[in-house]
Every structure is written in structure tokens, then in C-alpha cells.
Image 1 (spheres, rainbow, N blue to C red):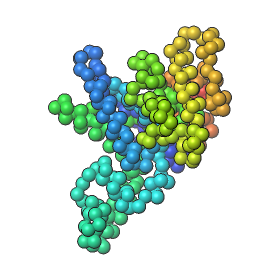
Image 2: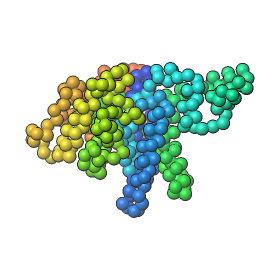
Image 3: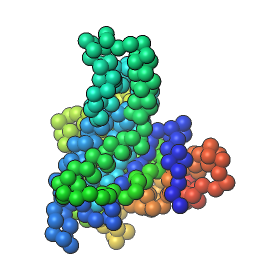
Image 4: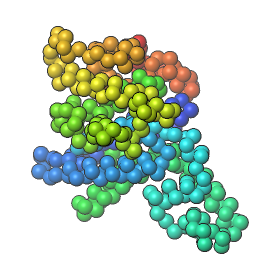
Length: 328
């Protein structure tokens, strides 16, 4: 039985979430389908461009993504504090960049039309703006604006109607740094685990490919939430060194591709991140390859998961025994 979204996304507990969307019947509707011979690879480019546009409009940062042939993964961070700093005009402009319309809110951002508005209309606009501000920090609205756009465009291309995605996206709350880093690595390594890429550089339509391409230019991608660097060490970054993260990804990818060689000392993962988080190599490889299946809709250490359980006033929370096994 599906879990209510209100119990999956609780911003007071965490602002980081892992979201997964799958094509209906898991058909290859965004890639090459060897069974039918149809090639929809170009739709992954639609997804990547739409994702970039939404991240610039919403107060939601993309930490990691992987656009696969029949599903996609996102690690999102909701920045509610930034949304509160926006003026009413900026909120309306951001919302209209995704949902163009000709309502009275469009008149409000036009200096000439704004003077013609009555007090009743202005009051209505303030109420609407409040709703828009909340929606611009809503993962549900973010995913709707993303998936609906792809579905409508794909159906228009195929000259058909009907479902493109499964009934709704799956989300997993990431309660602490260990959950965040584990999930980001899991997402970035999707193409390598699936056998459609051999290196991080040719893992197309992933956040790590974008990060590495920008790293060569000495910068970070503006559409992704930044990782720490010597020149970018502020508050609005993920508390993980970019170089350490990249090295951990490379070593993990090597171990996953050579899983049968368990005694090769040269392939052992040597990462300060794993030492800092207290995760041994065996548990780390499980997290990097099966974290989505190992946990339900909450991922984190036992302490944080217990706090989450009490917040929901539930007797049990699926995944606590897994957290005890993998994170302790």
C-alpha cells in the first residue's frame, strides 16, 4: 500500500530527498528499445534541459541526477529559506517562467498594468503569490512540472495519449550526510552498474559527467548544487569536497566492475569520506549498488530514523534494522 506523500516529505526533518520516476511498464520510452527497434534517446536530452530550467525557477537544488532509458533518479535539496527572500514580483516571474499565463498576476509584474489594479485585485494577488511561493519549494510540484512536460511532449511526438510514467514518483528522505553521499554515489553510478557506461566521463546524462566537464574549466555547473572546493567553501554547498567525492566515485566504480576480484589490494577503496562516516568497504558497496532496495522511504542512521519515526508517531519504521547493519 503506497505511503502518503505527507509522510514521505517532511521538510522539518530533512531538506534532501531521492526521487525516482519509472516509465509505464518500464518500457524504454527514453532510450533505445532493442525489442521494438525504436530509439527515443533524444528524450533524455529533453529531460536534462527541463531539469536545468526547473532548478533555476524553483527553490529546489539538484544535487545529483541520472537519466536512464526507462527511469530516472534525482537527489533534490529544498531551500525554503531562499524562497522567503524573494519579492512577490520575483515569485510570480519564477512561476510564470514554468507556467505562462495571462491572469492578474501577469498584470502585477507589468508596471503599466499594475497601476490599474484595484485593492481587491492586489489582495487576491498577494494570496496567489503566497501559494506560488509554497509551490516553488514543493518537490511534488517540481516533479509534476518535470514529468508532465516530458509525457506531453513524448505523446505529442508519438501521436498518442495515455500514461508515460507510472502513477507517481517514489521518494526517499535522506536524513543525514551519510545518506546523502551514499545516495548521490548510487545515482551517479547508475549507468556503470547498468553496463551502459564504463567510465564517469562517458556516463551520459548524469550529474557527475556535468561536474567533470565543468571541473576541466575550473568551475562548477550552475544547475547543480555545488560541492566544496578551495574557492567555494560557503554555507550554500554540500559539505563534501568535490575532489574527494570524485575519487570515491572512481574507486567505487572500479570495485563494482571488478566485484569478483575481492583480494586485490590495489582495488581497495581508500577514502577519507568513508573513514569520516565510519562505513566499511563491504557495507559501502551495498549502499552504492542497492540503497534504493535496502531502504524504503527513509534513509539515514538509526538515531535520525528513530526521530523520524517519533515525528510520524509510528510504532515501526521500515529500514531501521538495515540502518543498524549498514551505517553502524
